[in-house]
Length: 191
Image (cartoon, rainbow, N blue to C red; front, side, top):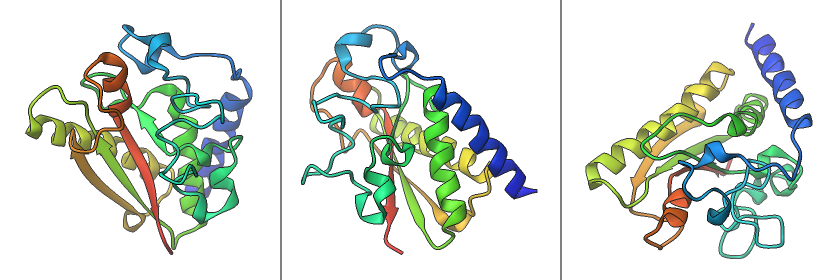
């Protein structure tokens, strides 16, 4: 039964992905105040476009995809597994529709590789109290974990951590920076 749910989720993801244009932008990723100016695009680019097709949050300090060491599919920009950052709207832990296929791809990978683990690191912007942002980051990460569990990922493969506002992706104090900081990063652990 779990296999049928996974196959169904993958089929739906493939249909959604095939219908998306690379040039489409999704206004639902933001609260509507900074759509084009913020640099956040749809899940196909996962954020800032720096000319390489990677977002600033998808690259680590060496300029590589953060999960590239797991396998080649994690550094293929055409593969949803290369997307490791899920963005959220202000004060929300609801996963946006554009990121559902990305989460489904990660869930499929985890089901196929039961020895693999992923840490979902929840983050928030600097607004609100420290306690509020820790709780919101945790809720964001738990939302993704719940989606993965429904698709057959084992509890032991998932870890939820919240950093709240403590590890910003952008140090600015404006809406464009806050949009980049409202996120969950999927960080795979070695086998």
